[in-house]
Length: 107
Image (cartoon, rainbow, N blue to C red; front, side):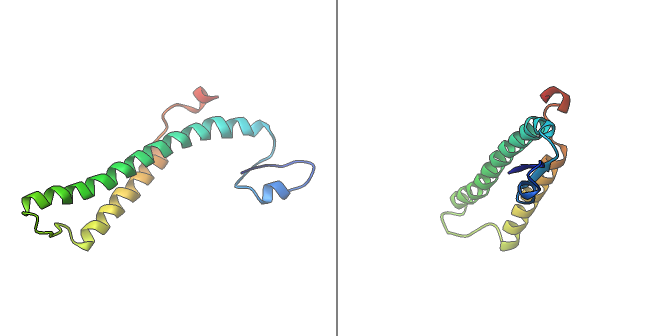
């Protein structure tokens, strides 16, 4: 949650995820960071769903070519590196570079 420092002390601030000194900072936190976070999470969920659908589908279509032998075209390292690279790089790029609209436009 969001803790706002006030006359009652710092109990709300100590038990919160984000703290702001006054209500004036709440507008920027909700509109700017909330908008960016909503878009980033939507992109991330869509990406993970597609990423996790491509890998099993490639195995499914490989089985047609392999004559339903039940062999797996990938080793354990292939699966590990696929998930590592397509998971970590996507989060880094979206987290650092994705700004769909400017800060001034959201306020």
